[in-house]
Amino acid sequence: MGTSRRQFLGLTAAAVGSAAVGVTTPAQATASCLATGTLYLGTYTSESGGGTGIGIASYDATTGKLSSTGVLAGVQDPSFLILSPSGRNLYAVNEQSSGGVTAIAVDSPGHLRVLNRQPNGGNAPCHLALVANGKYLLSANYGSGDISVHPVRTDGSLGARTDLVKHVGSAPHAHQVLQDPTGNYVLGVDLGTDTIYTYTIANGKLALKSQAKLTTGAGPRHLAFHPNGRYAYVAAELNSTITVCQYDGATGKVTPGAAQATAPAGPTNYPGEVIISPDGRFVYLTNRGHNSVAIFAVESGGASLRRIGTPSCGGDWPRHVTLDPTGKLMFVSNQRSNNITTLAVDVQTGGLTQKSSFTAPIPVCVLPG
Image (cartoon, rainbow, N blue to C red; front, side, top):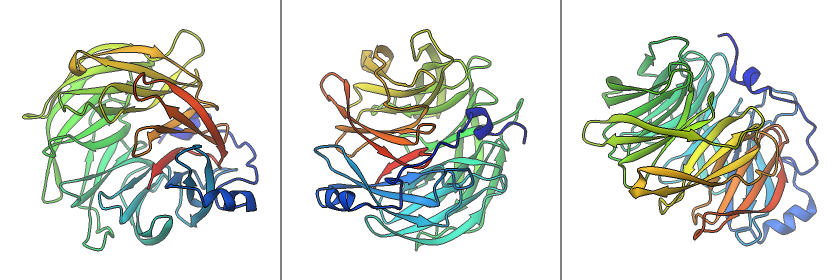
């Protein structure tokens, strides 16, 4: 498939300490008694220094401290994870050359059981979405540049693939798939073709409705919708920008607008994940290279962004970022330094303050459970 995502990212095999996922020390066991939440951790199992499956951790809502509580071993290269709306099922990509998706039952928070795995027909799946009221699981395949569709059975397991839609263009690399806020459209973000594709889905099949092209060479990676549904913010990996797009929920049309840098001038930088605060007032983006979390104030009802800070991510190569359900804690997966940092979020100013750091093997995704 040419250069893989892992080769491009320059993945290193740093040693992992005793606090790694799946190994619980007595001190961690004591701390877990104070925990108020569960986290599921994605990793690469086929890389030296990687995990053995999906990591499980707890966190204390006051201190932000993480504690390892176990691992669901045997799930291969689970580099991206999502939960069903009910919380009863977890889904993982298997980011391998012969890609797959794995369905997992959540018997209780932190207690997981594999239901089944399905090959998805693509190469290096890296992102997932549940769409059509949870009827289908979609996966974005970076290596082969396409999107796979699997029906979700009543028990949460996955049926055989019903569609595989190839992105047309120069060196397609599908990097994200998600449902729009109306629930009527599916968007595919492709880093290789610099395009956002809008689809409808029916009877397990995707139908292309429109395309939106970003600047050639921008490398759009992920987008996040404003809560009002009228704007989307697109992180571009290759030119280190974030673009404000207008979104028409009636037609699914994306209209790219102004772009701006995600980090001050300095080291070569590759934006990773982009998220928005629950109240829609702040957008956050990880800067791999600058090793920071960019903070943007959302202005003009969502139509513009103003960068107000780039505090340290507390590690090296911040791949993924997410918020806890309260929006007051942020978890950053630092891929190369093998640690997850917890940052306290000031919901009034958007500011971030590091609270703690947790050692984990090649963390590339953190999902609150």
